[in-house]
Length: 404
Ligand code: TTP
Image 1: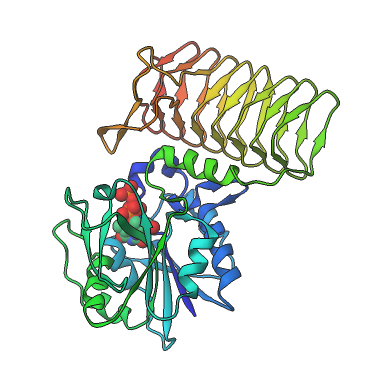
Image 2 (image 1 turned 90 degrees about the vertical axis):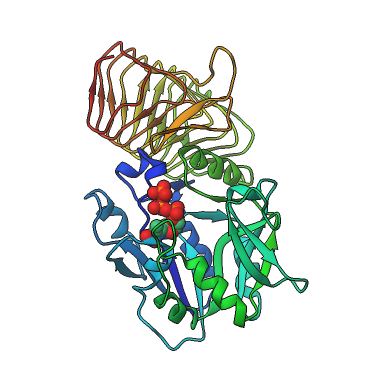
């Protein structure tokens, strides 16, 4: 069976994380989202023939990620003109069926397996309380797709498009004859709606956790979902006088030094060093090679590879990308005085995060001086430098030297 994963989006809403990594490469425990999805697909489909659609042009840092993908064929999407546009670059083949997977979808293995095991054409439908924010599915009395209504105040059902499909490969012919949509893209869902007029497409409904990772706080949420079901596993080294409460994964080569307290669920990836005297609270994820030093407290945050938070810091409800260095005493505020929802600028628009507690989102390779304070909902672009003692109360651009 052919499997196609779409990974050619711009990921602008996910900036600054996507300044230095493609969106499908956000971490999920010790893996990335796309590697997790590939692992699940390979586990379910026997000898899959996998294509991953990537952009033709991308920041140089993306190369390391794309070249990590093994056993897949990379296809370049020339013009970034939508999900349908991406599929126009897939070579035609004679296999009966194709699995199409949006590269930014996170869901359970169970949902993917139920979809792929369904005989005939099928798509994943997710039951949500707020369907008007998504593509809501019109479903007939037999449970088959009749149409998709995008972001409507009157959605036809509470079941939304889950972004994973198993279809006859003739869908790819329809994709070739798509016309450009009012928002200027070739939409795969237009081809699907046309296909559903002449073929039965079963909607496989699921209530499992699902997220299309679009905004920075989704990276915290998918890892929370994953951490909720970890088994405890300690392969790294623990010095004496380390206190662990709850379920914790400490991978091979990681070291936790004396005086450290860890409250699970927490994931400490390969070759991390934590402590002495650090405090990791629930839903902390250190992907790998992360250094957390003395008198540093971290809570509900994702900290990516090679980052160092070595002395006297607090980080809560935040995403810190790779190779960041926090100067001693760098502090993140994650709660407003009025305790109202924290807002963040997403593609230039103020948007509610849905969280009363939200800290910062820091891009790759950022450096902060000593005693820097970062206010709730602030984003710091990749390669930025923050002057010692600065209070960061507005978003910082990629590469900017912020003096406050
Ligand atoms: P989107 O989330 O709609 O777009 P995006 O990834 O560009 O993100 P943003 O809006 O924040 O800039 O994309 C859905 C999926 O389709 C995602 O897996 C990326 C993929 N995609 C392509 O492969 N090619 C494209 O031209 C587009 C628009 C999306």
